[in-house]
Image 1: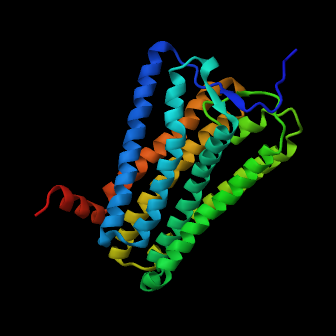
Image 2 (image 1 turned 180 degrees about the vertical axis):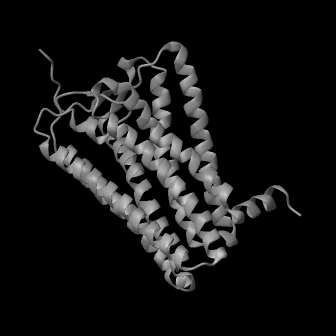
Image 3 (image 1 turned 90 degrees about the vertical axis):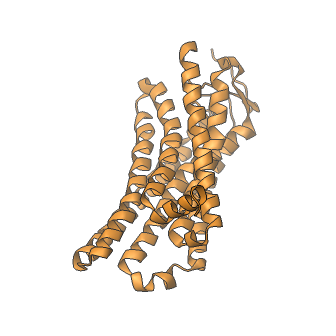
Length: 308
């Protein structure tokens, strides 16, 4: 018979099941990725903040994505690396630290969608209403969009974890490589029907809103490009929108993999790894893709490293 420990404040994380020979390779990969994410994203935020020529809505909104990438990976990667180098019995975490990690992890995933949605709106205004762009996308609008993106994510994730906090816990093992909502409410022996319903509704609403807004936005942008035969407009649309769409597709594909693998218990380890890669892969590519596609950022970097 299984022994139950009710409402224990000390939890154990299952972590990744890897061999001694692989743990150093995985640790080096994760540490290198984390350092790159940290330097690249913090660097781009500082560059945009310091350079007046980059004080444009497109770049200011992108700062939200960089801040989100740093926040999400800082809460996850160092802990995962530390757990790799200790035995499973020593992978302990306080319940409130676990809640905080779960909150940040879900904020990271939700913000990735909401921030890319407001960036899509910015591209829509820039291409479909270029003459009114500076009027519509003023400082107040940028602030409103930013607060909306983070506020919606905060409320949705707050309710998600609020429903989990109310449950009594009878288990202590987090069956994942890090703390998330599903792993937390599975610690309970109570009825978690409401948690499952809200979690599924949360996912469906977020994904349908995100995908729907992107399809609608790009349909209108495509229509504007087809009706307006301006080569400069089409070139601008292709360059800026391809960057945004590339970021969105990377985030969407890496996000769908762990969601799909949740339905197949036999692939638990693959799900754990894919959940970590959902943080690492998009965060590593975001700044690289944006920097490569932006002439303004190129000029600023050249001025810093090769001053006249």
